[in-house]
Image 1 (cartoon, rainbow, N blue to C red):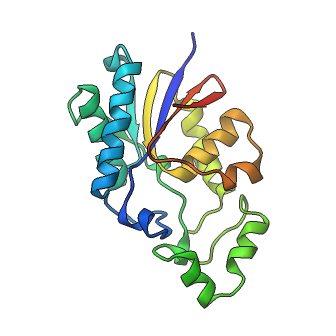
Image 2 (cartoon, one colour):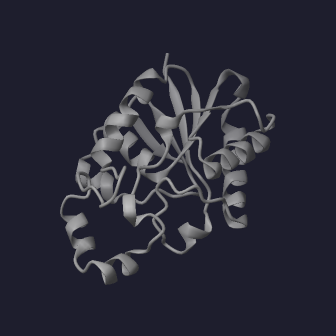
Length: 195
């Protein structure tokens, strides 16, 4: 029997709109992001015949929890009734969190180019900062444990690492992928499809 996981990136925040690195800063959704979450839930409502049979899991950050609650409401489920898993939080950008790349480049010329040389393994400066490789090591056990059909609300970095781990997408390609907030990624036995 095939297992299906629907991945949803949280809706837009003001920091997304400003191209600020969020990482593990706990920023809220904006109204546009709430609309994205509702529309993703409406899409799932048409795809999932028996939503009560699914596991619903979210990153514990407020932007992902609100997205999950809006998705569940649009599906026709109570807003509560999902669980959180701390392994699903976004990668930590260290001292870069809250800044745009122009701001970082002004303070440390060449930092963006250094990151682009090997984005998968690059670790920003600062305590708790992570590379995509470190994030993948955190996500791999969660992905292995996800046995049943699942709806997962998480972050762009997490979804990039899932594409690497589950589908074998190359590190360099994964690290550069755009992860939309207004679409759903369906993963079925190692095959990913944007809906």
